[in-house]
Length: 370
Image (cartoon, rainbow, N blue to C red; front, side, top):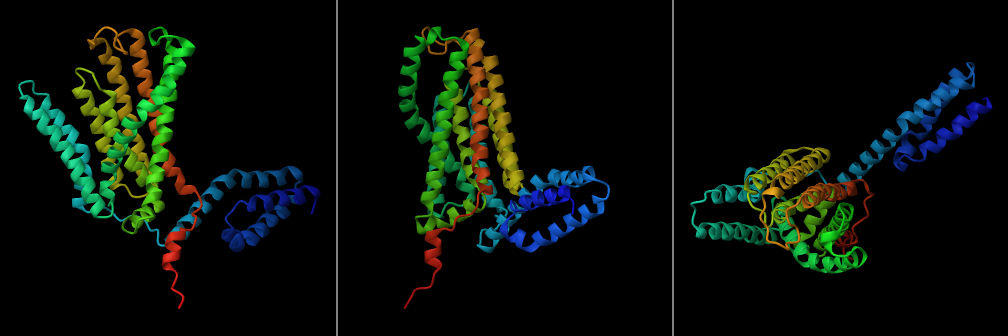
């Protein structure tokens, strides 16, 4: 064997070490023999042909390693009882979709200018009544999958209402000291300010959701939820997706003539949820959520661009209608869309992490020593 063939073999052996250990034990020796056979066939042609053989292996190597690690993980999860989630029944599917349809019905009702004021209050009571009833039913039934967007809505409300003032009180004085009054900030500083705030809120929401999910395994009646989410982290993404219903509501706070835009944005969220619940496979599920959220946030950004000149906010309002505020509001909505996309994708990426044995479940499954 020439020096070139010997060096190519060394490199190929190093590439094999990136495969899962079980795969290496089963196919590693066979793959090396096949590679060396190809080298012997091309060795007479010279070193250039040898490196072409190695290049073909290098070209296919990243995808092959990724595929085998993913397949090994799925096999391990299946052997541990973490199976693919079963399709929802019609009643469960309807229960999940009611959450996304209620805001649409409320907008259709209040767009009638002749409707009495008590109808608005009745719709508000109906919406929150359904949310509270669904959360209570979800807790009583060990948090089924249809209830995840309801929990995400409640979590988003709590995190934003509690955390906004705290982070606002920390960020705003720093920018005020560095750049003066907000009314004189240039456009770039305003975008940076919104971006930092959105980034902190995204991290806080993700950490809060992960802490909540990990706490579920400590309770006997919700430990099955932990196992289910551990098998498919897109369910955590779906829970966060439910919080976007409230977030879009918050983005249009104090706006006028925004009903049709909220209707379109919430419709996009509802369609994303529908395709998520009907999709087979985790990749299709996360694609449904990310597409629904992305299109919804683009609708929000377009709405702000159109609506800002039509607003009649009082003098001295933090976002007085102007060309600068138009760019800031539109740009911040697009930036929020990026952070939301990251927030939804982050839990899905946990599917590719190695599974750590659950000590609580393992201890319960061990037979008692007598």
